[in-house]
Length: 203
Figure 1 (cartoon, rainbow, N blue to C red):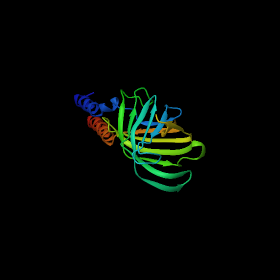
Figure 2 (cartoon, rainbow, N blue to C red; figure 1 turned 135 degrees about the vertical axis):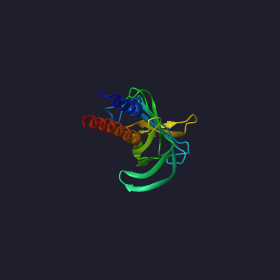
Figure 3 (cartoon, one colour; figure 1 turned 120 degrees about the horizontal axis):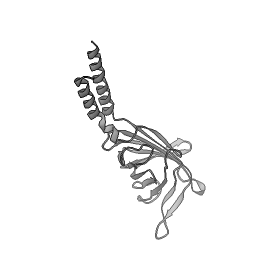
Figure 4 (cartoon, rainbow, N blue to C red; figure 1 turned 90 degrees about the vertical axis):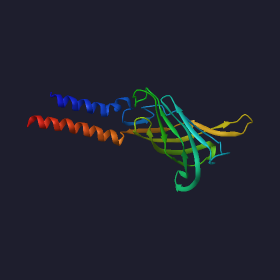
């Protein structure tokens, strides 16, 4: 291997080396690949469907925190969903040891999370679906989150006896991680340089 090829390989490794410290790109589902955990919504806004309510979820391999209901609450006719809302300022944290692995804990400031909900049904039945995405800090990768609940929620009681929120086990979830566009470009550039040097050597 020529000196120029060694230099090119070294540059390519430097340009793309950050990928080795990042979570793996791919798609994982729960139940199965990871523990989606338990969700809760605190009625910080005063009651169900109120601006300022905060939703979170905690599992053994990650968490969602700080997602705050932001107006408007939109009525829709898309059975089983009757309402569409947005939750902003959510942070998705992926812990080391999850199926995405990597070398540490990764956080993503999510864009607005769109939530489609049935609203509370008789006997504390509730159906909702959540969708959103964000950029993973430090790696530039995009993470996509989808989660659902279809079951009976448990009311959260305050110290004075009033209902201050609700909670339940996440029914299903999916997390997808895709490469940062810059990483794809750098990888293509490095591969192209090595290929060009090989072709030049063969001439």
